[in-house]
Image 1 (cartoon, rainbow, N blue to C red):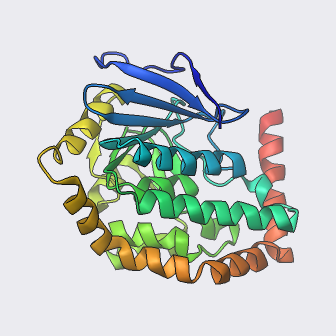
Image 2: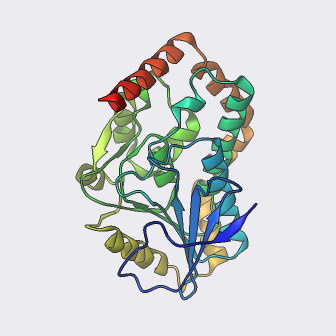
Length: 285
């Protein structure tokens, strides 16, 4: 693993912080980590332009970053994006379309591990959703304990529109945040919610006008644990999330096999191919 001192791509101006900034990745610098020495809070920023699509490498970097923050005894983590318009565009469809099956299996195993790391984190987490957050981006956000979102963006699980059935690892954190009835309808409809609608149904906790304001709101949330014993806090969190985590660990192989079998079906591959063709044609215009 390679770490490099560098300058922030999109610094949080107006936030008076002492920072150690590193880029995490052996080659792609697809994650940036900022640590506030005063608070002990780390900001993990996805940095895979243009829209932070979750490919195998970015997923692995997200998992490594969480494990490193836990090892370094970070007091809180804020997950965000260096983009000004997209938090994460979700799974990289190129990982799913006409895949090498071995890489596809590696990809989904990595996604499972990322979910286990972020959903089960011993460290308090907050998502600063500073752009659109469909599909896998929504999964990441709902893994966090608190969500602050900027206006005029969308968030949700829209897999059904691609003919994909959301696997358990995709559904669990979504269901943990929303009332069951709302979660069921949203998943069946493949619905994306506006920032305001997401606030109204409880998918996010707060709105912020700017990224700087959103950062301060995330910090304020993380500071609510200052006087709480970290071990007691972590164990209490595990009592709420432990069954979900154990269910995936026990059913990990079945979940992997089911996902690979589903994604490689001819009709799913056809839908994914049409979607990629539409994207290609859109870029030509």
